[in-house]
Length: 246
Length: 382
Image (cartoon, rainbow over all chains, first blue to last red; front, side, top):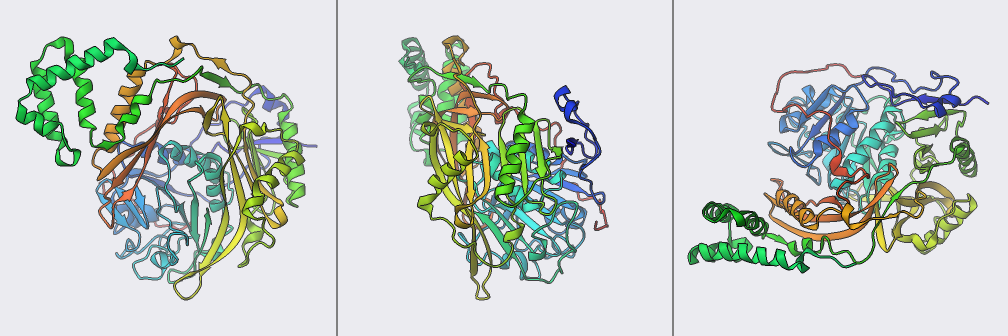
C-alpha cells in the first residue's frame, strides 16, 4: 500500500512547513495527489472595521493564497468600482458588521440589493465566482424571509451577474469564532474541496451552536470547487437555490 | 475557595475614598449631570467632568478615581454589574492538556475513514492523505468533492462528511429521523464505531439539520429537508466547555450516518491551578471593562448578557478556565432598523495562559486603506 501525505497548504506564496519525522516515515511521494489550481486565481479580502478584529478574520482566509487585494472595506469596492475590486477577484471575502443583504464598511453600508446598479453591474459580470460574508445575517434563509432570492437576482441592480455562489450566515456570527471559521475555510478552499459544503463544515467545526450558515447559488454551481467550476451563469438568470443550516 | 475582590476591605476603602473625593469635589450641578440616567447623559460630558476632577485631586487616589471614571463611562451598558462576578471562584479550577495521541494515529484514522466511508457507500482514498495545515490531514472521495474525512494529528479530532452531491435533486431525504430520536441515534453511531465518550460529560446543545430551498414561483419557497443533526457540548468540572470541543452527528435516510464532527479530546485529569498562577481579578475586571467600553461605543444600545466562567478548549491541545463575556449591541448600520450585533471575548483566568485564545491571534499584516479608487482591473475571467 502506498501512503502519500501531501502538503496542500503550501500554496502560492506560502512556505511549506518542515515535515516531521513521523510524517516523513509515511511519505512516499510528495507530488502525488497535490490539488492543483487549474489556473491562477485572484483572491481579495475586505475588512469592515478597524478595531474589532475583522482584519484578522479576512487575513485568515487570504493567508492560504498569495492573494491580490487586502483592503479595509469601502462602498466603492462593492458598487460602482467593483470591476476593479470585488469583481476583479475570483474569490472575495468580507468580514464586518452585516444585516440582511447589507454589509457595513468604513465609509458606511452598502446594500447588496442595489449594489449592481452602476455600469460595473453586479458580481460575476467580470470575474467573481465566489463571495463569502463572515458577518451576521447577510444571507437570509427561508426561515427569515420566504422570498430570500429576489434581492439577489431578479432586478437589474442585483449582484448575481454571473456569480456562482455567495456564502454567509442567516443567523448572527460570533467574534470569538469568526477568524477560526475563515482559517478553516481557507485551507479547504485552497485544497479544492467543494465550496459551500466547506463553508458549512467550517461552521460545524469552529462555530458556536447558534451560528448557522447559508449559501445562495445558481443550481448548476452546486458542486463547484475553486479549481473546477461550471461556466458562469447568465447575468439575466433568476434561478437560485439556497442551502442552509438550522 | 470563594474569592472576590469585593470582599477585600482595603479595596473597598480605597474605592470609597476615590468616590468620595470625586463626588465631594464636583459641584452639585455637575453631580446631577454625571450620575443619573444613561440615556440622558452624554459620555463626553461625563468624561470632561471626570478628567477635570482627576487633574485636581491628590495623586495617591488618581488610580482609584480612574476606576470610578471607567465605571461611569460604561454606565450606559446594561447589566455591567455582571463583570463583578469575575474572580469569584466557587471551587478549585483545573487546566488541561491533551494527552499524546497514539503513535499509530494515522493508521487508526485511515481505518476509521474506511469504515465510516464504507457505511455511507462513500469510499475515501486512504492511500492519498493530504495535509491541510500544520496538523490537519484529509482524505477524499474521487467523485464527490464535498465528501471528506479529515483529522488533526495533535488532538485526534476528526470530521467526516459522507458527501452532499447526491442530495442535489429537488426532493427531501426520505425517512429522516424525528427530533426526539436524534440523540439516541447519535449515541448508537458512536458505539458502532468504537468512539468512547463519557456520557456524563455530554449535553445536547442543539437539534437541527440541513435544508435546501428553491423559489416556489409565488414569492415563497419550496423547502427540501436533507439532513438532521444533533450537537453535544461538554461539561467538565461543573463548567461548560467552549472553544473547539463539540460532537456533531448528522443523520440521513433511516437515521444513517451522514456526517460527524468529533472534537472531544482526551484531556486526562488536568492540573489544579494554584492561586499564584491566576490573574489578578481586579486586572481582569479592568480589562473586561475596557473591552466592553470600547465595543459599546457608538451603539444604540448595549447590554451584557453573560459573564460565564467556562473551560476554553483552544483546539491546539490546551484547555484552561476563562470568562466568556457576551455583549449584545444594537448598531445602526445606516439602513433599516438597527441590527443586533453581539461581541464576545474570552478572558483567561491564568496570568500566563498556555491556551491560545482568540484575542491573541493577530493578522500578520494590516489591510491597505480601501479609500483608493484606482484601477486595478484584472480584466480576465478565469
